[in-house]
Amino acid sequence: MNEPSESDFAAALAALPLVAILRGIAPAEADAIGDALVGAGWRLIEVPLNSPDPLQSIARMAARFPQALVGAGTVMSAQAVRAVHDAGGRLVVAPNFDADVVRTARALGMVALPGVMSPSEAFAALAAGAHGVKLFPAEMIPPEAVKAMRAVLDPASIVMPVGGITPGRMGPYLAAGANGFGIGSALYRPGRSAEDVRRSAAEWVERYRQLAAT
Image (cartoon, rainbow, N blue to C red):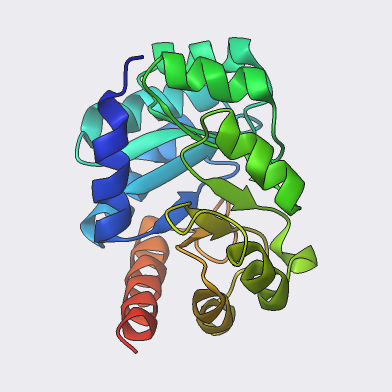
């Protein structure tokens, strides 16, 4: 197994366990939006594969921000994992759990965060080698459910709710045992200026750190 990204993932989580989900970003925006995020302290950046020319955006940001873990979301096949790897991506996020996707990512030294909704899916994903699980959609998995999952999962497992997360919703999830979050349209959406993203990114960082300190 080739695992160069494992320690990088742990370091990124320790720095700020928030994944920036840049759905719809175009390659022409990648440098400026990446500058805004990385400058504010973000170290986990996801470009969903249903964005315009996503591999180009991933390649640009992976080269520009070696201190960040850049990769793709909506990764649905082993072939897509290999394409992301070839573009320089080191992070694979999916809305579902597919064992081939997880195993291919692991074999290529990439971080795998598959989407799950139930304890059964979470156990299967972790057994396949996932570095953590994306609880998706979080709108259907309230903090009470996260607390119940935490009671049976390995305490070292990484659990990250994604979907409809707002600054106000982070507190209850953290109290229930969430390790971090994926943040999408509340942080970035197509057409939003880099300066707006910079301000929003800083606000998210401040709010997370306030909650984590309590």
